[in-house]
Length: 229
Image (cartoon, rainbow, N blue to C red; front, top):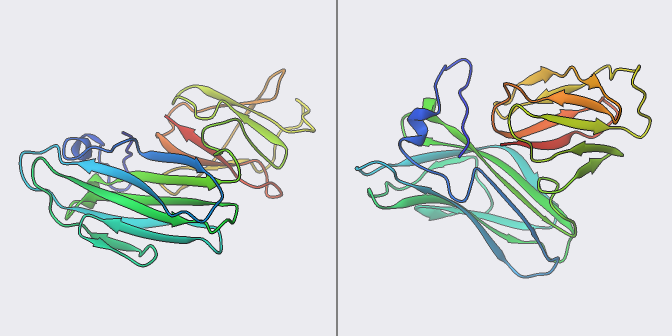
């Protein structure tokens, strides 16, 4: 499970992990066939306390391809579409909450990438990040070598503290990218300072929080997704 502390709140992930878990992980990645069959994708939140526990969630980013039908259910209610936030019903000590997406792509190639915050009801300081990355017509960009705008980014996922290599088609070691930056899972932009290597620009992930990051090579390139584990 992955979680982070908002800098303004100064909260460690211990308080969240001591109350509930995340199954299978904080990032559910799936690729499926382009057809008109509804599919269900679910992340569970097992109660790890000895008491009943309620969870609150909020959708903080993402969306899906036009023409897809995407509905969300949690422990307590199924919604038409994906609302902005809600409280789940309290779960017993042996129970689990969940976020469940019911997706029908109607034979349209595309993607659904959604970012949620989840926290114990009344204790937003202990929030964690969870992500759905669902695609058809192509392999998920979170599980394979990810390439956008002809820039290779690897390895992806990467372990926190390790380095990733970015190789643009016009790579020249003496030319540094002028506007490279990163959007972290806490929703803040950070400048990126890569180092030139023989095969491309090397970028250290030292100190990066686990979760989904967006790497912006320049204003003229699409941002690239990078999962830090």
